[in-house]
Amino acid sequence: MQTLNSEITLGEVMPNIAQLLDRNVKLFGNKTVYQEKHNGIYEGITWNELYSNILNIAFNLRNNFGFKQGDKIVIFSPNRLEMLELELAVMASGGVAVPIFAFFHRETAELLITHSDAKYLAVGGDTQLSRLSSTLNLNAIFVFDKEYQEKFSQQQYFSELLLERTDKNYSLNTTANPEEVCLNMYTSGTMGIPKCVQLMHKNILSQQAALSQFWNVDSNDRFLSYLPWHHSFGGIFELFAALCNGAVMSLESGYGKDPKEIMQNWKLIQPTAFFSVPKVYQALVDLTKHDKEAEELFFHSQLKFVFTAAAALPQKLSDEFEKRGIAVMEGWGLTETSPCCTITNPNEKRHTGVVGKPIPGVAIRLADDGEIQVKGPNVMKGYYKSDEANKDIITTDGWFCTGDIGEITTGGLKLITRKDRIFKLLNGEKVIPSDLEKLIELKCHYISFAVVAGNGQEYPVALLFPNKKLLDHPDYAISPLEGCFCPRDLSELQKCLHGCLHDANCGIGQKFSKIKAAMIIDDELSVENNTLTPSLKMAPKNVLKAYKAYLENMYGAKNNMLEEVYIIKLEDVPALKKMTV
Image (cartoon, rainbow, N blue to C red; front, top):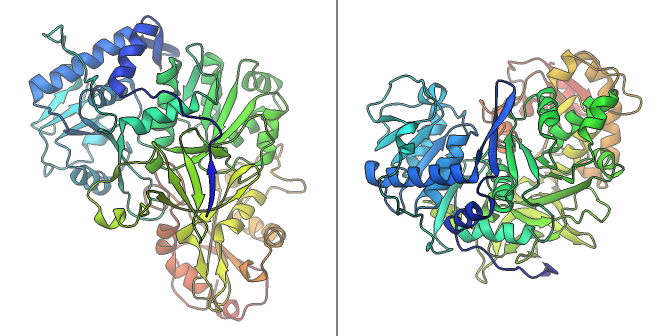
């Protein structure tokens, strides 16, 4: 087996979250730790104030609401100060915080709350309360908003937890074992039902000890943050990067949904570090293309680095930062690995798909079938209440099986695909669908998502989901690629896609992996129909299940289809002649 180890030794690791907070309040007492935008102005809280609130919350949970060592509290809310205070108080006092996506519908929210065995729940406000039923067996429900509907008898104002503690000598659990579970995070569920990942103090803090040797983040840094805290990229990687180093974290008021609002907040904060995903970077860079003032604002001189994850950052975007001397860093990992396993060297040229070398303390190896396996202090304790998921997830010699397929290159680890996405054609040939999906999405910005399928069939095909927002409001000043004439509707998109799909096919070496036809479906993937995860990644299994009838029609079936579809034939396929479009 090929193995890749870090060339840097992992230094001293803080034992637990309580000791981190205790240290930082002494180092940064009067310095702002976190801020939110109110009436157009960012207002913050100092480390002294945050620490005092955390002590009050931990004390009142225990003494007034019976919260005990090992108890769990689900936090069902968007990012906000109260969520941060509560999560840290629980983790630093022997409890387990369980953040979940703020806008889950009732069925999913209640499924996770029940599965977690939490006795306590915290919610943002009426939006979350309206998605809960009285069947939940909870000791208390804390509500962050000051005004909300009285729906449950066990509802409490969050302010009850902020009441001044009567015991001035009360302290957090600074003696907690590094291997004590303090955070449960549900996976995004790209390949099925979310699993509950049990994370320990050492998982989170070893990560930050390792990363401190890669970047120069300190108390002078400013983060503009929108990544959700129920997800490991935002809730562990970015959040604790700021907390551990005393940097100021400013909540992006639009939660990353509106590029123009991000830019407005960018002007106010002038972040020195930014953590995001390729789609948001693309939207922000597009805003600077024909606006000199926006360009100078975004690529400002104090911006040290940008960090990207979730998908490969296209080379053109990377070049925009690099030519201005702004480092681009990319990482790879999973919730189960807290999350970062590898990171790219900003001093080396980036190559698409290559996610760098292991961080200190972490080792990577490839199994015989190419699956990436990981060993290190960042690997979770295991999945909660899931014997099936835990079965074979750790090898007999102690390596975590990630489910990702990769290869080791001179630049480090290169990602290829998810192991369970590879499918076999009728002739036995194996197809890696993600290769072509990436090429299609890269080739045409008017396609939001591409799904290549064909398990057990003679040839692969693709289901394509358009970017309706871009089609409805085409920006002719920003052409995604040279020669693109910017289609205005699906009919025009169908006509111009033939050439782009042909070019994408040419980027695939094996003839059997090339698609012979594609179907544009006049529909959008979404969190609501479970075809997108809360972190807006495509959930392939759910997509293929939801659009099974459409896929079958690509192979000659005559199922009824609710949405309008457009067919692009790249080869003369008999099945498509039978199909009524």
